[in-house]
Image (cartoon, rainbow, N blue to C red; front, side):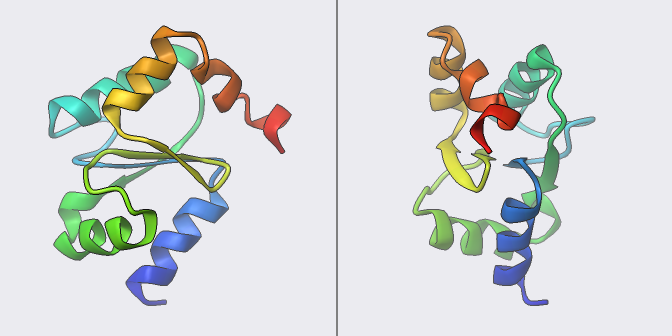
Length: 105
């Protein structure tokens, strides 16, 4: 499986996928940590993909998503956005509806 296929698989095979710097147990940047904290607040299960393991993940992911920065949060295969958008959705109460993956399927 090439890297493009792996990224597509991570996005499609997980109802919530977070491409981030570090892991959910050990975020390696403030923005990634911010999204991890928000997801932890909701108690949702999600797949974390560490873009620091291979610099090409970041390149290929941005080519696919059209989004230049990390982290990138995907729910049900759809790009939600980065830390700023995730925080905004959290603060205005919309993120809970987005994360309610059973309802969105």
